[in-house]
Amino acid sequence: MQQTSNFKFCVSFLRSKPGSATADVQGLAQIVDDQIQINLKDTFSEASKLYKETTERVIKECFQICSEEYGVAIHYMDGVLANLKSKNYRNAREGLTGVYVDADTCEESFHEEPVRPSPLTKNNNDVKDLALIGSQIIHILG
Image 1 (cartoon, rainbow, N blue to C red):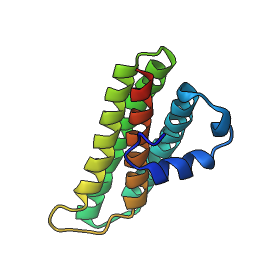
Image 2 (image 1 turned 90 degrees about the vertical axis):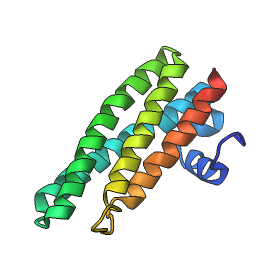
Image 3 (image 1 turned 120 degrees about the vertical axis):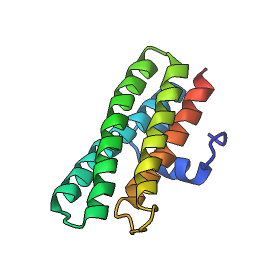
Image 4 (image 1 turned 30 degrees about the horizontal axis):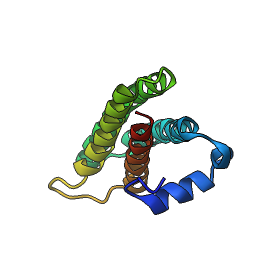
């Protein structure tokens, strides 16, 4: 998979997943996409929880944006998984682009004035890295 933009992250991630050593390219794409779905749901839950707990207006707005973006990303990911299964690789890649944009929009909401530190940075970066890798693996498929 030296064809990915973040080879080190890709190798580290795949080595941590059972079955990846013997998986074909379709299987690797499935492993990555399944993990993205888990990360999306976890981050959606975290953003929603933080939204309820936060009283500061600006931060609350950021968590609202993140909850909305991750809700959309979960929907995109359902399509990605269905398209991967049916071997509709172009649409799967397009869905992963949407997932990447949604995670990026969440992160960027914290960087608008007044700037606040994002407690979701690691989550957002992981989703973006996995979406890129997933898209690049699917690109190999067709």
